[in-house]
Length: 138
Image (cartoon, rainbow, N blue to C red; front, top):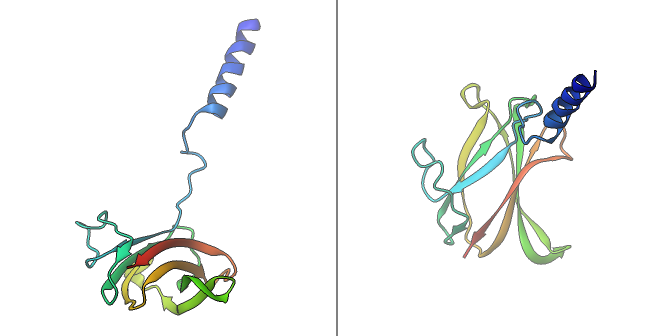
């Protein structure tokens, strides 16, 4: 009986203290920036510093659990004094196509130097930021 309790305690301890995320694993959205058009071969050549007037290519990866196919992309410039140190630079609403159900890719051109934050919202819950990433134009 004592051995059975010890084995049971070891199993419970092993299940609660291991670093495995297989049971509670969730897909998380992400944003990747690049200086060149994003393809399978250069998707991991990420950069976050860009020259003014150059194309900033971005890839938004979406989780499987995304219900809405309409996203709002918002770019905010940091460091200005307009609204608590942030200035809304651009907002864009996009609809994910059938072949782009899990990702969206495009580019923007920014001529003003500064630090920027790209935020992505879903139409399902427009108050909650799905993901955000910071990049710089220098």
